[in-house]
Image 1 (cartoon, rainbow, N blue to C red):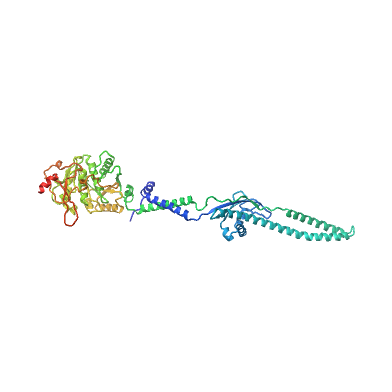
Image 2 (cartoon, rainbow, N blue to C red; image 1 turned 60 degrees about the vertical axis):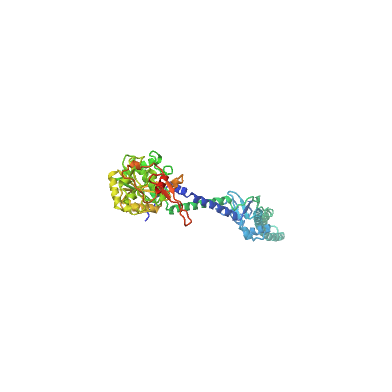
Length: 574
């Protein structure tokens, strides 16, 4: 079961963004495109507003504890603007065939704080209709309010007239009876009292009626009339663009983290440590990583990295540990680079170090990388030794630049499969243990061959070379599991960026460095110094003429490992 990943920090998130920035950018641009499309297809909406100052009339009352203060309850007035009565009057003013209920849906009313003003807005698909609609609803509201006030006033006047008429009749009757009554009589006193009371009531009613008949009704007025809008209020292009970009950015970040979560490739040293659960001993970047066929200078940035790696490895080894196997989680030259530079760093301490190239090439193009890097002869090598063609002394070569470093190249035997499990290899390593202080084995990757596990079982410690962007997490976990099953202590991983192949500047360098097949072996008595070649020396070759018969051309490179010139080789053929 997969162990939970440790909590990510800011650098992890920034790394995810840096590795998948194009996903985030693409989704952001897609969001902008969607925003532009929405802006283009959405119908344009224009809005115009009219400000109406509402003045109180006799019938106005405000609810106790209402939101607005004063005589007028503006919340109630705001609800009256889109009412059916006002909408019908507005439709009549606009002479619009649209039903009043449809017109009312396009109206909105706002009450500014601490005012007796209603801001009546109307939306339409063109500026002229927006202006006309806002003005029509404002005018209809004022008319409706004025008509309501006038109707209430008329009702009050009518009520007063109904009260005045019987009082007038009663007063006439009292005056008639009073003219017939005897002076000083009780009847006359009673009639005079009735006349006085009736006259007072009639006077009060007439006074009120006079006030109502002289009342001027003012429901309000338009203080800011509607104007034709210059720009539509909807769609809001900036809002759509911003929303589209934000949504695209969020989706891009989600996709980036999903890609990161399900991406099996290792992209940073932190991935090796966190996702692979393997300690990182050293991490090289593009500035400190050597070329395909190079060994780092001891005092350069990369050389200092391997010097620190050497110190950590020596501190981790137990007493008597001598053999270190370097393997990889993926195919490539990362194992060769780490093994060669580690062996060189160990040899610079004065210890006698033997570097064994046990990584059989996948093709002739990849052959003899250690020979190119350290300037030694490509043959004979380990595969020739294990095949029984040569002895141990024949394959061990001392490098010219680092005298305490000896190299056993891969060799050229094409039938070396299975020899890594042979007893001859065990005997060879036992003999080298007695001759050298440390033995560094360049093993094939665990994903390409079981030889890495076989070699690890003979070693005291192991190091994994991890090439970023090429190595995958399952392969890294499998490599650690293979080493664990044979009981080899895994010290950690050396992380390198993705490597490129060797740089070749001439046609001769683009051909194989060695041919796999039977070769004449050197005299065992020849000293190691005589077998040492200069670095990056490309052996001479000749090209055989194309075969005839099938219409195709095939050029075969014949590698001359004996040191003879091309002309001498042709003379020998004769």
